Length: 137
Image (cartoon, rainbow, N blue to C red):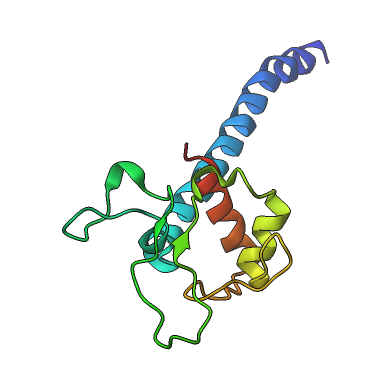
């Protein structure tokens, strides 16, 4: 019986270390998936990042806020002229950001102005994007 106790006590630190590593990997995957969604699927980067004189994104300033690169198709349509900084999401709680991405409602309780689409993301997609944006400075 004593030998089993020694083996179990000896293995516990390794099991705990392995679980901790798995937890870090899960967070890393969420951030990487969020990067993919924000850059290549939802295309957040296109409006929330400034551009140089050639119209190319300034890579060192991604998600730092910028003038919206497209004009309203009708003069009477409410249209955002500036896309705010979303790197770090400092102005949003996780719950507010989740509501914005899953219901299309801003932290003020109002619908988003065009050209921002009223996203209806899955909660997991929204959480992954939030994790990614929070990882940015």
